[in-house]
Image (cartoon, rainbow, N blue to C red):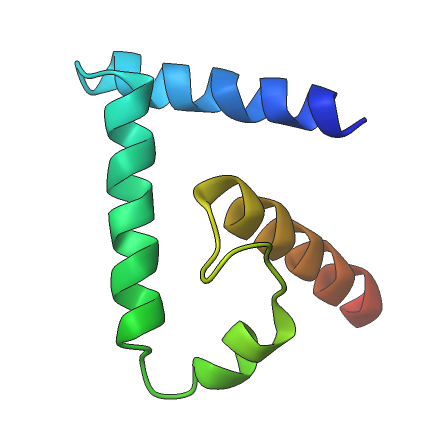
Length: 81
């Protein structure tokens, strides 16, 4: 299951890269840079969201963040409906 999700994530990165004339690696680096910036300088009200997330290292990877945000959105959408 996890391997399937990783392949989907890779395909998404490839599509974004293709549409922007770059490489999947560059897209991932830019995503990580944005995550690091948001993690180091959270916007007002973002601390509770960061507190809900779990990740393996010091900060989330793009894959971890996307997966957890998707799960959180699905949970909130299901409970709101």
